[in-house]
Image 1 (spheres, helix red, strand yellow):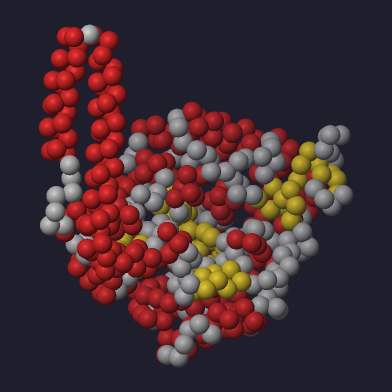
Image 2 (tube, rainbow, N blue to C red; image 1 turned 30 degrees about the vertical axis):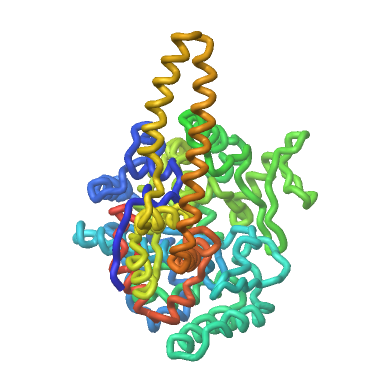
Length: 529
């Protein structure tokens, strides 16, 4: 593939908060640590050098990867490297979307892989390992139980239970068949079918299935996939669990930051609660709240703890305490030698709400790196864009604006009445002066007539444009088709489309091309064709 790049601000698709972060706006600086630059990483390496959970991390990943390492030497090597104090991670995370969900799931992981490679090139004396953190404890099943492929929505309709990572895949067979039946017949289709069926039909839980599919796609790049829904990891987190629940310590810090961001004109993405943990079993994941009598209640389960009982429960069963969206980042940074978190625009925004919480617990705040965003097309569409006298930058404008601009560029007629209006405006200024001399009270009447005429001129201009569009009907239809292809449903391709159609066309070269052309620290929107 070939690549071209445009500024995120030129796409009209990203929030003011993210754009201000990329622009290093002064008012956002208190809400993050080091800048996402090579110099920033040098400082971050020094800050994270005393990470103490390396042996635990190594042992847990060895266990989680049982049976998967024989044909994955790079992954095996990266797990072993975690024991070295000169090894650090760059991490991205996401929910367990079936069949990987939207394209940006893939983009996130490739961004982490490429960033690890770039850091190794800049600092060869250290090791950098890309990590995908599976959101196995998330319980929002409706967000992950479907994907879209070739315009068709394919859903796994089953009863959600507790954390999605623990859900059994026994009844996903028909959904897998629907998905794979869209592939057609080709070598790439056969390869993808094998990966999908091995993942979802040969593993018992959604976490295991997701690990299998992502591992099959990225094992040659050394990606480590971590499931933190483990007792051993939660034991490390136990003291913070108690402080959050009993002292409401996290709530106070995050609320303060959220209030400050709101005052600055930024909209917070997440809401901290007084208690930011769920009680998790194989049957349910429910919020913990403080009851009126001072005890701690697990909602909807008739389970209560006194403070002493809660402390004992955390100590004995830390795996039963599941962090919500504002505490998961702290958990992640506590058990990984992590330098950076790679996230989407909304994720970067909510991480900005969290730095004060990291500071009060003494946990280093990671560098925030927006994932690479991209659009993938082909030479046929690229050719249409150029034949329509458009550019990849201009194609981000709405379809009506593109069509109006096209007609104005191509027309043989003068559609703009600006010159005529300037002449009329000059006449009205003379009329206004004459009326004022006769009676000063007539000036507003002259302005009113002028305003009505301006409105009529604008209306006439629109009618001229509409009439001339009939002379370019075929080109305007092509503009609509290009927009529909590149912006399905009116949004970015990466936010709705699954990777399967692209894998069927390009095979494993798809990931190689993404890795080759993504530049995580350049902060440009990538267009591949």
